[in-house]
Image (cartoon, rainbow, N blue to C red):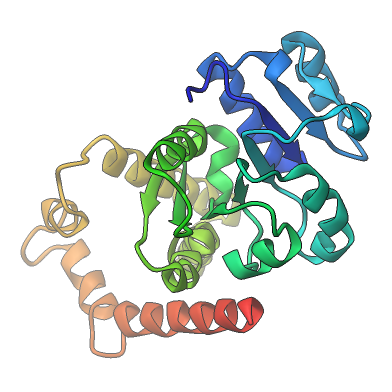
Length: 273
């Protein structure tokens, strides 16, 4: 199978589903091989489908079991969507699910004919093609199917595979929820700048640009560990060292982040049942 000829049905085309669809279009996937099922299509989705000759909401009776069934609906709607998924997934179908908190067993129970399932957890920067997705494969996923899933998921950013599905909860805690941690950092940095006397709007701009720039510097330095990037901007006896003395104290950022990730991990496990 290859991405130019593979048949795909995308169930759910909200923000994440639409981002993936845009990425697939960039891979050269033939629109005629793609069908999208979305009850409330956005104007952007409608325009993209028209431009790329993607079938939008065709009669489901006209659809044959696809090679790839991508499930991008809201997790709480899985029960309602189960009959549709069961009808669409055939014995040769690979299900790729991006439903938070829904395990491979959940999907298998609702689409029992499908013997191959990939559970994936992208994060919100996927909307701009800069996401990272953690993925786990069921035992029935072949090497060819895994490679194809990797290529489809990488259309919105990098992909990291875990050997044990249970680690997806930790992936969720680190990268799935992680953008919110970074946004909070920018928020707190701006508030600290205002507390130090800067006008609030200026502090906000400085904090935002600093987080953006630091992230881009790390992106452009893939071989340099974050710790080394930190050392590179820390002059002995300087202002950065003074601040890091607070952030790197025993009760500083590291234990706080560990507690935050542990809390998110525990919640993800609870949601997964």
